[in-house]
Image 1 (cartoon, one colour):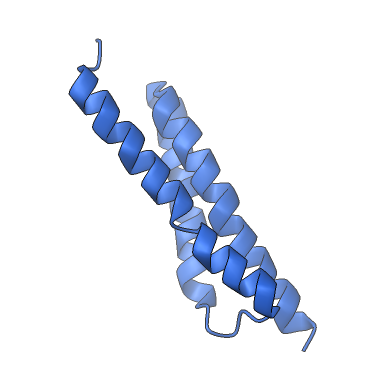
Image 2: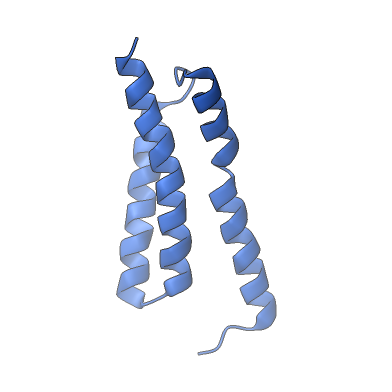
Length: 90
């Protein structure tokens, strides 16, 4: 089934906004070398949620769902890794 152009455009904008939403947090943590304000539980749930979306996308063979959620998983995973790294360094 073909996706209508308007739906594809809205989906693309939504994916890009979701992916880039993590960039300010990543930059702030990296610059300050401090992730103490980041909720570990929130990011564990977020990373798990993106992993589930990827699995769902694979099951229904929806490559836009898979690709966008892989990007979000990588971005949120970066926040989670920095949280662990900078907390252990304290």
